[in-house]
Image 1 (cartoon, one colour):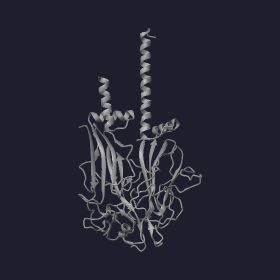
Image 2 (cartoon, chains in turn brown, yellow):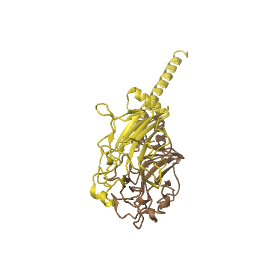
Image 3 (tube, chains in turn red, blue):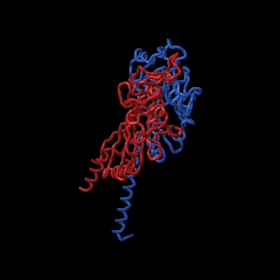
Image 4 (tube, one colour):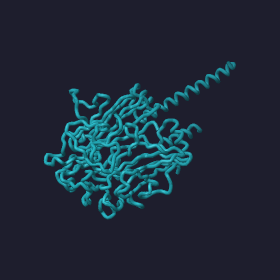
Length: 225
Length: 235
């Protein structure tokens, strides 16, 4: 098939799992060396066209700090809506953000045109639940043209909001357990003739989605008939 | 790319010893807020900020599609374009904006947080509701080329509940989702505004298609008239 819906799920707890030292740095979900990775950077060939339709990352819940709370991270034994709470930063969860990079250009910018950390997991949570629902919808989609390299970068700032494999806070050492910090990317891969049609639709200013690619094919057939 | 979906998230978190930060850090802690004070999310001096006021250049057009804030502290968010507040009372007086209870961030958050209890279990035990949105920012808010805009967060109370100790500090956040049109797409956005057509990616694409179709019709009409001229004696 030449149009294929694809997903990529990254978990910081798989493979070479994330540690406290990784907090605050950008991690490529494809080749960052943390969590599950792939063999080479994500790129499109001359006959491929990728449309990124959704990105999401583990959520965070802002709460607050209570009077008399300690000044150093503590071992978290109780969670808040499935997220680990830390009385220093006052949030539950990893404070994670996800950015899309095409070649060397970051997609999400602050209003002063400076690249930012990307979409907060609080706005685009993965997984979605009754407690954590999306505020953000990636529309218009992000196009990766033939020959471009693309990347999805996760940054987390709150190691104390993540649990280790032994159930302690990541800020106190150890490595992240599975399911603590995850990222999700949904994209459609157009290949061969459909990638050519996708390019044509782009030239025409038409949104690239499977429905419009099919419409273009039908209009070609109708003009031949 | 010339149409880009963008978000900005603000929280009252900054490193120890400073009230604001340009970059988020792993050592951020909550900063105290004053009740009934407007905090500019971009350059308000509390929490994460940016380097300069948010403004559009001559070749940019912004469409604000959603704003939201934490439901606790009775917080609200307001949009200010240049010096004009967007949300007003029916008597055209100033108001604090959209309450976080109507447009919560995150969606599904608690309506309040009981910070009096020092253990996380109390967060769950005391307040277990999930606030969903009652408000949808439609029609969208347009920021025309050359305009400055602010998103203002106002907490109506300082601490979540009267029983809380004064040293408790809530973490609150606010969120704005907008689409940035740049270059040719900003020109098209201006044209759509003149035409009274809603500005969204679909309509910008529609306008591009109509331009292309118009050009194609002109080209084919020119070719047909040239052919007719040739048939009539090659003049």
